[in-house]
Length: 239
Image (cartoon, rainbow, N blue to C red; front, side, top):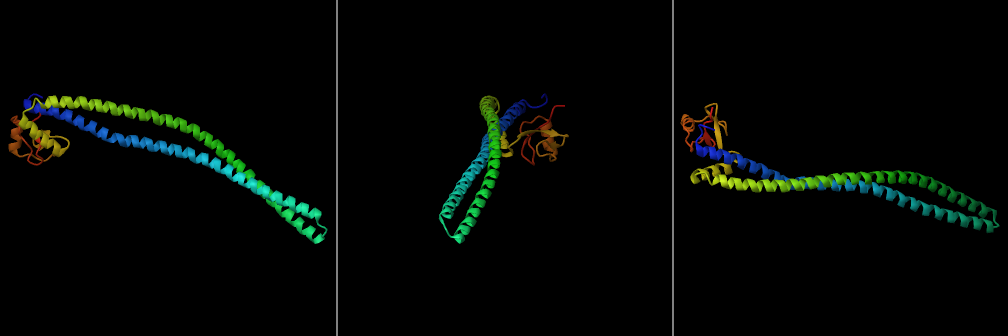
């Protein structure tokens, strides 16, 4: 960086480190959201498996209800048969016969529905078993990603701590007045405080045209040369 004032060279090195610091801080800020996304995915995966399990369970519950219902109709049919055996009236015998047929028809229809539910239940059980195995794989993958994310956080925190020490050391070598001005600009602009003059006429920060005085001040190596538009410190880049 020959041609650039030594104090500005120091600021440019400091700025590069502080930009790294800002990137690390952004990554750390995003970390909880990344972890939350993995946790949400875990909930989603478990919910899918639970849905399949409940489908199988509900099919079995419904089948048992039908089984009890069929048993109740069989019991009625059995009672009607006893009554039919005991009666001596033809009319009553015929009426009981009709009731027996009706109950037996109900039993047959219920048993048909039971068979359908059994088939659905078996299908749901198989799907639930497959989903349960898939969940194990997905959960293992999510756990691995969570561990990687936690390691990443630790690494980021370590790098940030080291960088903060380096920044403190570098800042100690810069003139206090110039450092204070640099800090104010960086806090305001959030990205860069020291920028080059581009194309010999424009600010490298806001890209607006500089006054001739500002451009000449930068070219002359003045450490306090600034852009009138954005207020950033400017320097003349070495060719």
